[in-house]
Length: 381
Image (cartoon, rainbow, N blue to C red; front, side, top):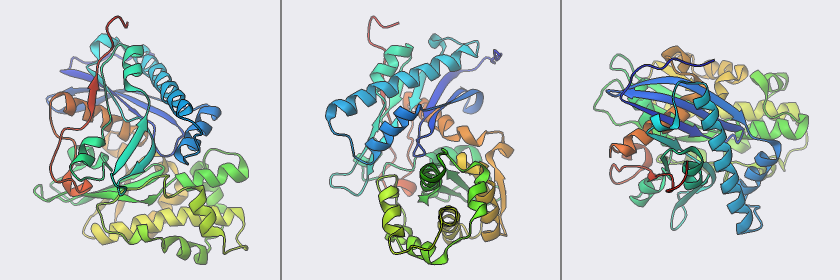
């Protein structure tokens, strides 16, 4: 089905493949006088072999630089296929798109290293050559160069589209890792935002190991088990949960090795009970931070894949009874594509030389323009 598109000042495409490592989300947006409209979306799962290779890269199991380069190249080709497919369902051609905002696939995020760094792959130049569209990528390094964590970056977008002068709100993105954006109704108040800990990453890993599934649909397997409070307490004792923001994390910390270490002292819980406990870990770590940093908020807006986990959302409501909990769909934005739209928005800001980071979130010393722009090489498309 082809979508009829309105006249607009500019069109951008956002690409996101996140810590869930489940696939590529793409969003085509128009921006007209700072008003954003999402015109089309598409999501494509990674092949099992590519997903396995990415997970190996995230766990630093790549044997050679050659393998890393091949993965960088392959991701760009997969991104390009999604872009072509997205445009095929619209009335636009590559010439109409000002730029693609491509987050890339994070394989190592180390903001506390010396020097700090964050590595994303998905060759931007190759993507530009394959699509004939300029690409903005490498969104994190400019923030890190001025003392920031380089993440999370979505709070700036959340602030732009979800903030209200009528009530205090908090946005929770439930991807592989969970992050929150605390949005006060006072327009002069700084945004608070940070990664709270794991969301789907550990649950996805656990159900894949035991049931061969990529994720726990609606949280049904978690609902079939019982939370082991001793295991949960051991997990919550991880120092990351007590650290004050600014802070960010990823699979470099919360991964299969971390989970094995947490479970090593315990022999009693069955697989379904561990899944229930991992779900509760997400809920408790997230709700604790909301209580700590957003105690006066009245509404929690959910986005990301975890929004579809009925068990997780139900338990969040139990832990946060005073909050109205809603999906971002209630505000006209599909929860599965908030981050893809965010990187299209960040590409727009880069082209217009507007800052994309929030120092109150990342800890940077100042606001900076995020991302690097590359154009298709001469002779391409």
